[in-house]
Length: 350
View (spheres, rainbow, N blue to C red):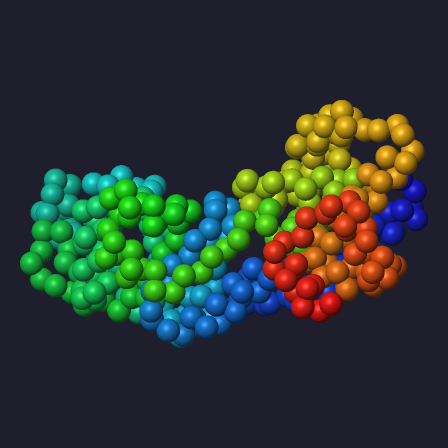
C-alpha cells in the first residue's frame, strides 16, 4: 500500500472520529453515535441523582459495570464509595458474610468483628454484578435490605441502618429466571424499577469504527508509537464480525493487532484473529464474471456506507455522491435490509 493510500485511510478515520458526539464523564470518556448509545447516555443523566434502584441488562462485554460506575461518579453520591460484588464469583457460603459482615465468634475463624460490603457502601453505591446468579436464600435477605434499609451482621442481634443506592446488572433474562422459579418475583420488581439496556455491538455497527479509532489512539499512546490505522479490507471484516464478546472483545482485538503488526502503519486483514475464516468464505463465493463482480462490490459498498451513517439514507447519499433516488434504487436492486426503525423514518419523509 502506497503513502497516498495510507494518508487517505487516516483522513477518512479522522474525519469520522470528528463527527462523534463524545461525552466526557469524570471517570471515563463515553463515545458512540448509534441511537442505542445515545439512549444509554440519556438514561445516565436522568437517574444519576436519584436513589431508586437501577437495573442494567446487556450481554457480556457490553460495559455494564462501566455504566454503573458513571452513574455513581456523576451523581450526588460521588463522594461515597462505589462497592462492587460479583454474585457469581463468590461461593454462596462466603457471599453472605461478604455482604453482611460478621461479629467475633460467629463461626470458626471469626476472630474479630468485620463489617460487610453493604456497610462499606453506606452513603454510596452498591453494584451487584451478575445478580441473576444470586441464590434464593440470599435473594430473600437482599430484598429485606432494599425494603428496610438495614442489615444484621452474622452472629449479631443488632440491626444497623445503611444508606445505599443499589445498581444491579446481569446478562441473563430475569423474566425467564422468575418463570423457572430461580429468581424471586418480588425482588425482580424491586430491582428493575429503572431498567437500562445496553445493546450488543453487532446491532450498533455504526459504533465499531468509532471504537476502533478510540482504542487505536489509546493504545498507540500507551505503546509510545505513531498513529496506526486498519486497512479498508480489515475494517470491512471488523464491521461484519458478530462480536460475541462485544466491546471487550473489540478492545482485545485492537491490542493484539497492534502487538502483531509491529512497526507497520497499517493493520491488514492478515493480523485479525478471525480473518482466515472470512477470507476462505470470500474465496468460496468469489465470481469471475465482471457484471456479477461489479454488482457484488456495489452491494457491499452501499451496505457499508449505510452502516457508517447509521442507515440515514439522505446523509448516506450526500456523502457517497449519489442522489437520494439513486440510492433508493440501489437499495431496492440489491435487496439490502434496513432496520425497521429506519424504514419507518424513510416512509415518513417521502
